[in-house]
Image (cartoon, rainbow, N blue to C red; front, side, top):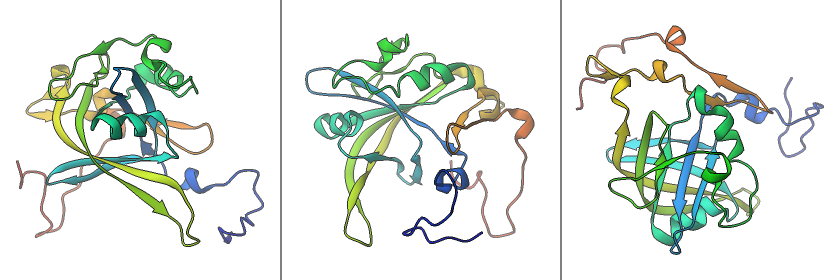
Length: 209
């Protein structure tokens, strides 16, 4: 099939876009406002966008608390969502009143960060501590803006030592949970991981330390 996105003439019961662009990593964002209120929400429009410097970004539809708090105080964290935390992560997506703590709602324990004020999810096997850089409006060809790209620079990283083996982080052992389309998710383990070496001149992960 081939369809026009503007006309949405795909003939399917749901837009298939997010089912095609998947699996997507989940940015489990925690931010704090000036009053100390905490927001913890999962974002599937999320990814690393640079490693010099380390930067991540998440797409926020409108002025949600994660974006509002990050802009207000200039900081946020991103906790890694593992298989064991999938239900708690899903609970933190509930539309709670502004300022109500999703961590408490989901029965999660917070752990203090080192370089920023917002905490991380204590049970998460890894977390990124970020300083807000800028928010970029994602304006469409038609001049409409409904989403905003929130960009942060990573200033600190937490990794559970249990997942560091022979000097390398074993991501597969963490069993990351990623977003699919509709109500679907993906779970990856060590058995799904494989290696490939880049062609000569393409570089590899050992080139920059």
